[in-house]
Amino acid sequence: MKKVLAVIPARMASTRLPGKPLHPILGKPMIWWVYEGVKQAALVDDIIVATDDERIAEVVSSFGGKAMLTSVQHKTGTDRICEVVEKCGKAFEIIVNVQGDEPLIKGASVDDVIWPVADEKAPVATPVVYASDEDMGNPNAVKVVIDEQGFALYFSRSPVPYVRGESSAFYKHVGIYVFQKDFLMDFASWKQTPLEKSEMLEQLRILEKGYRIKTVQWEDCLHGVDTPEDVAVVEEILKGAGE
Image 1 (cartoon, rainbow, N blue to C red):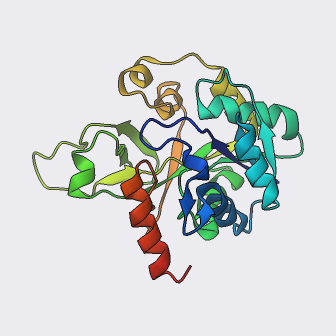
Image 2 (cartoon, rainbow, N blue to C red):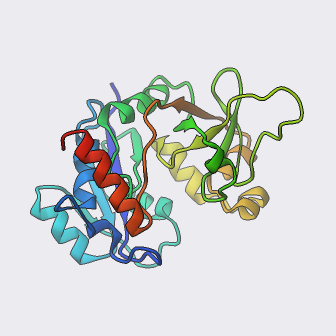
């Protein structure tokens, strides 16, 4: 099995929830919940939190995790991850990008997304879940159209596909990625593409360059944290799960 490194980019800057990675959820910082969830993945060999803030690095170290201070100049989480890979990723062949605001992440679900890349079915894989009616009208919920083999045809903030005839299933993208390491570094070096700029979605750069993204359907729908209201929802979910 190829060696797998999971990187969790985490920044303190958030307009709707300042200091988000350290915001308490049931008495523990959100980054702890993300780290612990990823740690349960059987296929992940190591985890590093990539951050430009010493406060986050100190908290991660305090609970026994690994953190790396990265440049404050990075424009995207992908750039931050690539810095970690360049410094610490020589021993790894697969890189997992897990958002630092997904406290409900499960290790088994992460493993499910790693397999297609480990089996070399695609250079990158990402999860999808069924989209709700609310998701379809929400531009912050990224919709994805997939083919019969589970490869992404397009990602959009608009409600796609348009329904004129018989309705089909609608899918929402979950912002977690598994990359072949060499492909990740190539991807990060490419200039932004027209559709990517239009939708403000990095993954469209991959499709516009002619590469395929394998999607993996998750039954469990994560609830990311962007607002104080999201924190309350996540805490209720965790309480219901006995956490």
